[in-house]
Length: 271
Figure 1 (cartoon, rainbow, N blue to C red):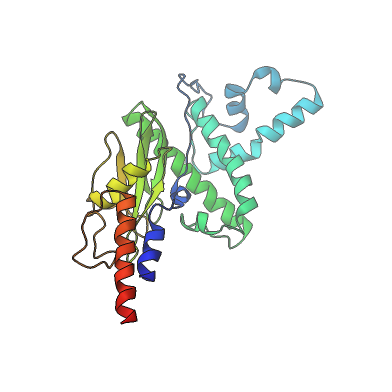
Figure 2 (tube, rainbow, N blue to C red):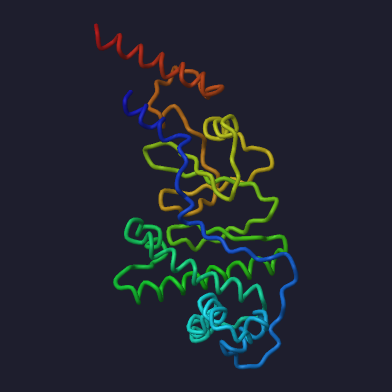
């Protein structure tokens, strides 16, 4: 029964599926279009999207702050990678990658699996930064593509073993991710800002009852999205005898079942 209890402990535990979740936000206001000149240069981009009073400010201190916030070197890196900044949304999105990169370097050595998932290896800092930037550019472009298809999309999440399964999220989206783990039953992880109640989660896992108004995404151990909804947890999954009532009505009922099976097994051992 210890094995059964270990299995049960995995149920309802929030899985850290947020590691395959990366979010860019696009404003709802109409973006300012880039009107030229072409080909783009860092100076032309700043002229288009940054307050011209700041650009032309003769104050050395203000100029330094501006250069720190919008370094032309960063824009040059993006342009060298073939990026075209079409509007102010692009400008904000691509500039935000720089901040993400700076933050990622702070936790890389303690949480390398976060970016290894995306094929970003820390062989050396230059290699890591280049791969990180490429990944973030790809993510932002997925958001743009999703928003073109549905104007209500506000961000995209990423699932799959390589983090390349795109999940568009709208303001009205309510979904959770259910992860299927071999030999351990099911565990439930919350993603996308939604949160099922304990009853909804239990009914989903043990009774196969889909919560109304929610999108449930099922993934396997490698975080690949499953094409079909899996069966609910069975007696066999928990290694319970065939004579116990199933499915359980609620968590209290399941606890009673486990307690009774444990009691019966102890009696057999003492005979």
